[in-house]
Image (cartoon, rainbow, N blue to C red; front, side, top):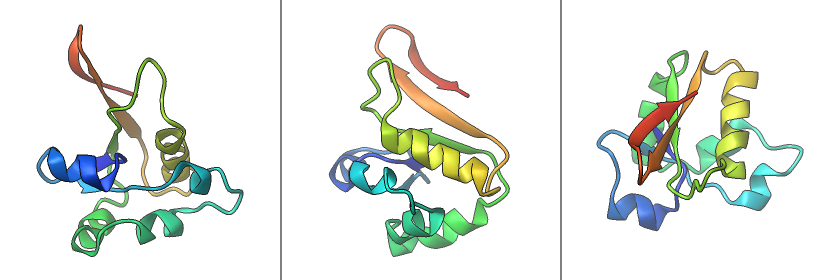
Length: 104
């Protein structure tokens, strides 16, 4: 699971074995945005685990979802698929009424 929340929120609580990828919104909107840029924002202790997941399905998480997906989440999902890093990207969405669920 790639957790795209801020480093502070990630450290406060996160799922075990998730990887924090905290990328600023203006950066993902740039035309030259790529996964090499994303990898630069992954803490060094998690980079090996990120590389191991190439070719696997990946779940993205951002708890700021209020009925829509954050631009950071969408852009990272697009890049993972467009650059052939993963076959499928799933979004982990936390809702108060329905509990937790994974949507594609």
